[in-house]
Length: 447
Image (cartoon, rainbow, N blue to C red; front, side, top):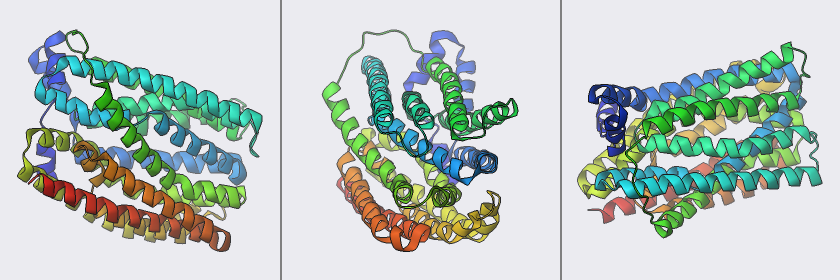
């Protein structure tokens, strides 16, 4: 099944062909596309390697700056992730939907218009979110100090643009180019910058860690920008636009992504509001360990989304249904096996973070169960978005968010990190059921 899925990604959008004709020989262009593309397995391996770097980074930071400062850094980075993904306003996923469609239609003018407008919108939104965040923390400084959160605000527009670049690469099936800069290069650079700064005498605190995170994000984004823009080069055309269609789709995706991001981090944020920083650190470490299990679904989605869009545009209902079933199967079984292994290894992994972190092992096991449940439907949210059913994806994520907030507020005061994990897993179950219903209905209408 994995081989079938990987073979299916060999459709390369017309934009890549245009890049080849613009400045390279056909053979070199084909070699470049193969190098950038990869598949589900390479995408998964990138995320696993990123997890390894991430664990080294998080363990090193936790030991260098202590549990309390690590908790401040963790909370600041959560705000970067939430703000950055929100500032993208859904255009990263919209790119994966529309760019393959324009390749099928050979609509170069619409492609050029979408690229220009999406870049401008994300740049503007990222700047607004960053300035609003900086003003908010200046007016009401958080308990962890002003500097880490101001640096986090500065990181938001860069993070948002890198997310858009990832969407451009995914739209062309360039899995490695989509995933390596944000998940390998950015984390490795953060580790090097943070360690180097502390060796040179910088304070071992959350401010230094966030400064390193900002520098790493800038470097990784600059490299990805150069590579993606060069790979997408095409003969100049007068841009055409379908702004109403783009913005309606992107806005709905933005709402769905916003609900998903908030659902993913609502438990951490509520633990941060109701528990001391040391408890936040333990729970955040537990979520990072369990998050490895989401890499399978993400890798399959990164590879499959543009294929869903192309099959939907072609009207090939039978192949679309078969491909969706294969995507779900190759997501579920590896995730289930990984959930068992991660749960067994959780005490040993968490103990590497420092004394007391192994207390989060039960939370890891509960969170792992949630990831296994979610994997049962594969990249169903990507399927819905690519078929133009963004509203169903939004409703599923919004229901999960509501369940996460309600569960965490109810359970965290009494059960701490275990209560937060139960709430997060219940929210994933709610989201999964609704995604399954929506995906089945959408595929049935394509018959």
